[in-house]
Length: 551
Image (cartoon, rainbow, N blue to C red; front, side, top):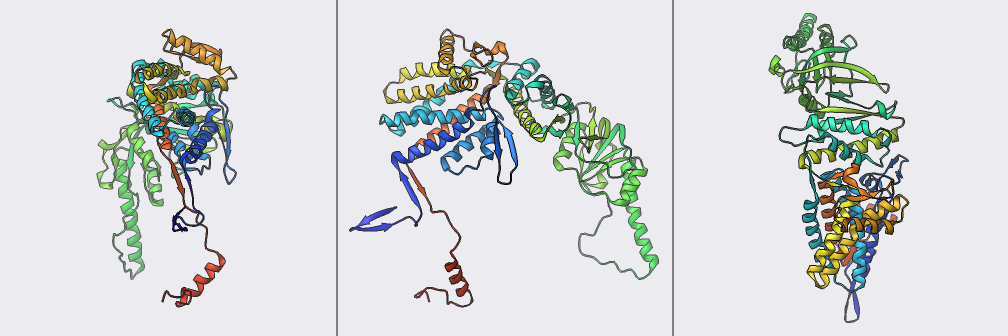
């Protein structure tokens, strides 16, 4: 990057830096964003394909989850990274629809490129896109369908739609049932749902059909002492965030012992202190102890003699979930132990799952935290099932909170596309072209669903448009039948939030990329050359390495 002064170039950027301006910069950014959208496009829908991602150390991930693919890909181009951010935002906000959001953003940029070639200014395009995105949000609210949070049949359909195409088809009904039960159990009285309260444990071995829900918690730990009971019925559970061991002094202190009997007294007192802690735990009525910190060897012995089931070093997040599941209070001091703070579970048991010992806290009366254990033949199967389950849990939670859904199968996109074209005609001017381009871009979803299913995208799009022109707002593409059908009746439904978030984040990203007309890239920093290293080394002792004139 340089400027001319009296025929002499003045260099502003460092050597190795480069600058791309105007149409070239826009074309380059749009091409990078389209490439990212193209990478995930083939994964959309029930008949979408999977990607195998191999990282630098050879670890393999097999998935068709948009955000997982984009996170695992080693993307360098700055505009492409913005597309990855869309997927991450969609995942954080809703949990599903990541591929949809990225594909729409890619298509918005493709349509914008066509308008740029017609010499329409980027500012006009971005203004039109913003208007269209706002109008799309209004229209979505009009086509949304209200549902009740307790309508388990609808919730199961929502979970089923989220899991379609993610290797879970064989046991979809069972998994949907587990998901709906889990969400309805952990939902708070005010209708909010935190999916963090549903713990998903993945285990290799057995089949998907053996997956189950535990109305309580599974803790990936084992009892601290083999003499303790393996199973405790009618468990009274104490959750302790304090170490069961003798108290050490806060300051550095020395204890001076001058005779053997003093040493024996010291050791006896230490043991007596630990014994009194165990007595306190026993006196509270607790027969199960979950400790977030350590349990001393002597304490383990006394707890075992008292018939108390104990485990140590339980994670903070697991302790909080145990509190929600059993109704226990988290106690941070030995002195605060009392019977009032205990939680209750029907059974606490140590079992072997997939060759590892785990603790099951089951049959809780009103568990506000639950666990789902999923099984599968290989690590890759279980991991992908876990991702499908996480997506489905999040979307069911969205519906329980928002109580609004839309039909799936590309139905909302076709409806929005038609309505936005009508809206564009009322605007006039060049903005009309931008709004029409936005409307056309939304049709990429049904088009891609058709392509991935091996159907003719143009025929199917015409068929869908015709159905929507007749007022059938919930008609979408059934990729198995290969025709337009009522998605509401077919049970293909999605949360409204998936669509509103996908369209708004796709539009925002497209607008941001379109507004860039200058890309100034700094030179990549390389390490110092051997000559520079030598010069630096020579100049370290005195000032010998300094260039002349620096003294």
